[in-house]
Length: 80
Image (cartoon, rainbow, N blue to C red; front, top):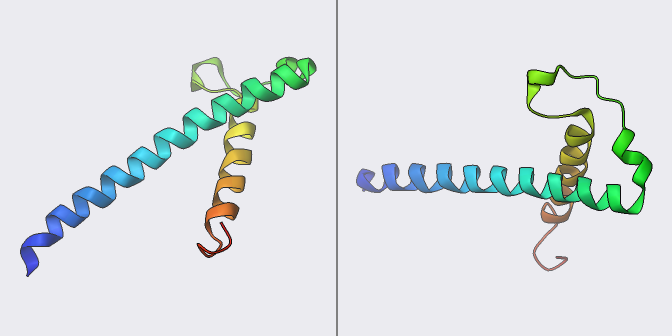
């Protein structure tokens, strides 16, 4: 009975990591879409250090996508 818990934990961890990776990639894609629609978004001011590995625009797009994704999937399956 307890032998299945490690497999469940590993599967949950992999699912969380996969969702995180896809969300980061989708945030980058959303940033490129916004830059294509509004070219002035390319000049969005960056308030992060250069060694952070992400820009302020990248964080904004990541959070925007995360809010959209979470609000969509927090509904019941019949509404999706």
